[in-house]
Length: 71
Image (tube, rainbow, N blue to C red; front, side, top):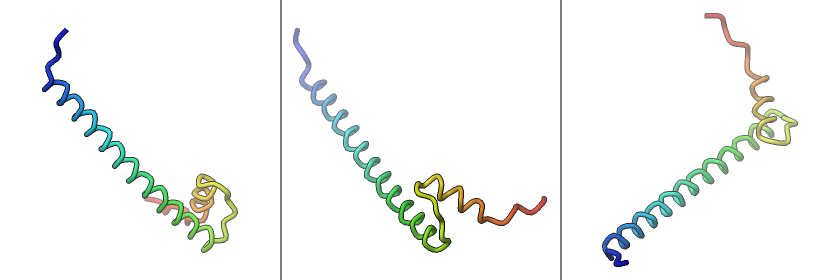
């Protein structure tokens, strides 16, 4: 069964573009996660937090917030 070489080339390029876009997205996500971890570590030191994972640290930070004022 004959195959159109232009179709194969287009399909390969589309697949490669998708891979590149996913790699870029992963890289951005990894940088954002690293920054979030840095900020949580700073908050842990600054406020003497005891949490050992990000969720616990965020919960402790929320408890430190003043209560919301009534509308």
